Image 1 (cartoon, rainbow, N blue to C red):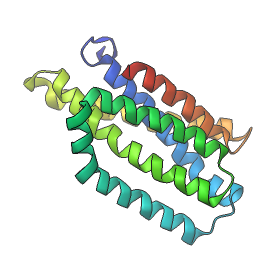
Image 2 (image 1 turned 135 degrees about the horizontal axis):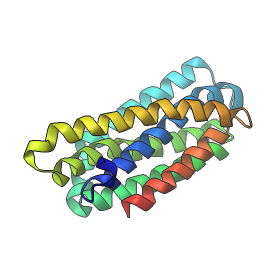
Image 3 (image 1 turned 120 degrees about the horizontal axis):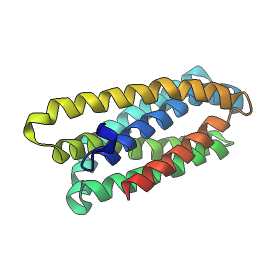
Image 4 (image 1 turned 45 degrees about the vertical axis):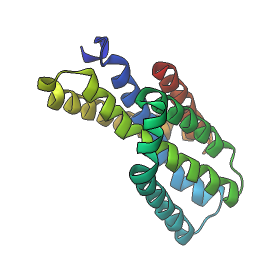
Length: 179
């Protein structure tokens, strides 16, 4: 019933689809790194560390400035648009350099999404409903994280790059709802 609520429905759909797309990425990232790009465990570990550092720096220093300049809704739309581009970028990456650049851009864009969704949801409901809406959001995210690997396995049987492409298409839906 929350999905049909004029105040929070679209934001919850964005959350559901984003977690769905993200879980497709997580499903495909490591296998593609190893089988598609022949990266070592050490290289993948360094890239994951880079993702964490970029996310930390963005959440502390970048997000507040961007949100202050553009507002939550516009910032979310820009972040989702950038996220969409990175999904397709992963799908066409053929070198470590390109893959790392796309990963860095992904880390920046992704660091915006969940905090902005939570902020928007908290502003879209009254004070009494704060805990309820955050719980509902967690449920939608969990559903997306369950369905993503199932679909990821199915589409990866066609191509190891396919989960990235499908994730990009799902991210396009998120951008549409954000508009």
